[in-house]
Length: 364
Length: 274
Image 1: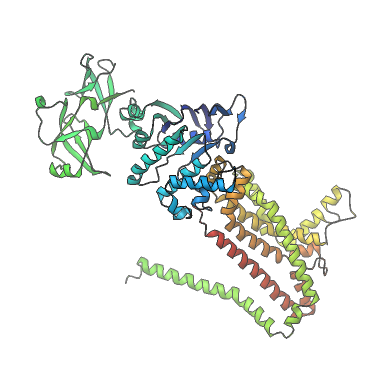
Image 2: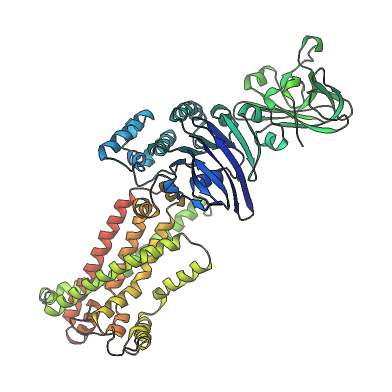
């Protein structure tokens, strides 16, 4: 039971073009910043937004086709849709929310099916509560139970973890992934969170300004992105402009230069000597040292001294900005313990160390 | 303490607001108190309340205002929903037309209705029928009440529907409910506190309708003489009867307001989350 299709939807000046093909039991991620067209894609598949052109098929049945003028209304599409902030009905309690969409059969069937879902999503103790008496995690599970209750042929989830705090997010992800996979239906999940895309997705599409700019497995597509746009979306902290000096394909490296003298080793990619390339480097891939390490005793090829320009607290540790003699700014992450033990202060000299493979050339 | 400190300013402001509230309450309360006092002082109060004239007017007022409210709910609810989901110039024009009876003097409304539905009105001329006209009948009383009372309901209902997030309706549909079922199961229950508030105001307005009724329906005992019109007639002949009628109307209006407010609060305990 696959879900596939393509759409072209124009709203004002915004044009969304997208296509997808998701197998049963597969979680496909739609990754992008706000206003990229992620939610609109879900609404279009659900039938809440009608595209100008397209073909949408769920379980082999076309629910939209612009050529043959098929447009099945949302209430007949059999799609489970979970919007951002969950959209629970405030006039119904948790149980009534869950059983809302179960249409067929007898009262006892509805009761049993609802109870099974309540059990499975661990909502037994809160089933009779009003919506405003539920915690964020409980709301999320009620919304998921409600979407699953109708036995949908496809599931659409819009930022399902955005409203949860960090700890809950991490534990909920694994539980929800297990539930989603056991449903054995195609799942399309929207997120702007790279960690979520990596832990939940089997496949990812990166969308920007209504257009898919890259797709593939989450690890390949998002951890070492191959375009500046995706590097910016996934939060790659350092994007360096380097000039290609020498190509060494046999060794699998490129020697690149910053400014007049600074030389870096970059993984090989087919470029031309003399051209300027953008190279990505994550802040978490930089190691700092207070003394100059011996080059011969270290496998990492890139070692550059610099002066600490700025130190800023982040959610988990500190962000340290180093400026090299040639004016190259590097942003590295460091824990509070390291910061204290190395006694890092603005104006100090630090050596930044990073492996060649931590660098990746981005397409311009 | 610094006189200009924020706390002092806030204290002064709160004192001003509490004083204006007291003056406001006295201004509204005093006439009502005076009316009740005068009524209780009258030896004929009970007799007057149960007189044929009073009971006839009461019955007519109750029946006509109930029919008016029913008609308003039936016709204005879909319109209110339509307005809550639309935007643009057409919506603004419709809203102005809906609000017009609120600012229009009721007497003008009565004259206008005569021009439209009266014996030589637009409709009878259009259909070439000058024999029958609704003016000066019980139906005219109902039409006059609908005309002046409908805006209060329509506005509240439209506001109530507008507060229901569109997204909830979308989700309901993805869960297999048709738009009409969604309206009954989600939109209407969530909007009901605001709608009931409007219903109370609208009913009270229909019950107290005077000017338009007098012009369009006249003042005939048992046929078009509602409570407010009966009070007018009684003022000229039997002052104590006018007092009794006034107290009765006061009680009826208060009861409607209290019951519907309470119903609204009960459904309000289900909080709407934005």
